[in-house]
Length: 115
Image (cartoon, rainbow, N blue to C red):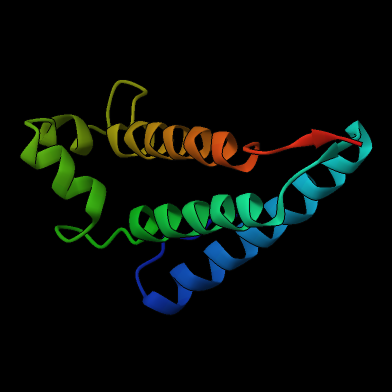
């Protein structure tokens, strides 16, 4: 069960666990597929993943990064939407993470070679 991160410690713990899991699974997957990932590229990708998750997942009402971005871009109403089977905050959070994970994946594969 994912808990809402309202303290710095909760956010840091969740992000460290998530990124450690990413490192293990991506490392095993690359090895199984015969891909050699450059260590600096992998470390940079994991740092991006940690930083963007940390920034977005600290959801304190009125203070969270995604809520502020939604409000400044005129999408605050969507962020607060929690009706008709939709949850705006959830969808914006998912889009944020998918976008940054794509950037991290592209960086991680920079200089990758087959074994």
